[in-house]
Amino acid sequence: MKLSSFSVCVFCGARDGADPAYAAAGREMGAMIARRGWRLVYGAGDVGIMGRVARAAQAGGAQGFGVVPSHLMQAERAREALSTLVVTETMHERKKVMFTNSDAIVVLPGGAGSLDEFFEVLTWRQLGLHRKPILLLDVQGYWQPLIALLDHVIAQGFAESSLRGFVQVADSVEAAEAALSAHFDSAHNA
Image (cartoon, rainbow, N blue to C red; front, side, top):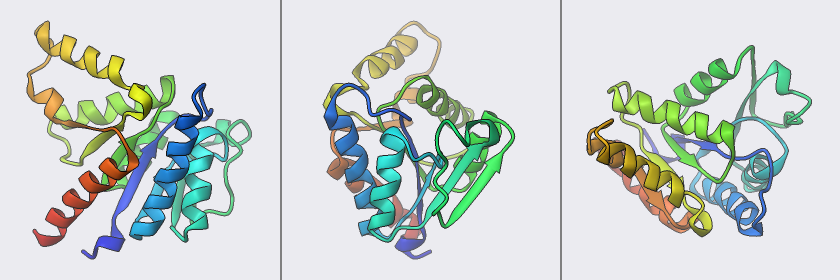
């Protein structure tokens, strides 16, 4: 498998959030995906960080694979200029299609939907259903409370310590790029 055939699923907010660094990281992530020749898999929206990732990826020439449930077509203003747009019936089906069509997951700042997406792929990893890397892009320390919660869950005996090993934390797009590249290089050479 050549490196340019890899797909990165990005989970992130349909809003920009309070700190302009979040939106900037979205633009940087999209540009980096394009520069590396990877395909973007995401929630198909053209709003918030989600839209910023997609616009930057497309501007750089990346293929875009968007997945949106029919009830969010208007609210998230589904981006129609994508290489592939899949419309699902449910949110659960959306997550499954996004996950199935990606080789790695990166979670940028977001709200309840992003947390739901993160915990579903993390649970699937914990159950041994996949071995895809899961990266939290910890912009301005956004994910520190989540990381502390995972450590608390482990400390209180509700998960094995291996749970933390299923999640990589990157404090910049450059760090995320390095982690993804290392994973894809090893998958390419396997």
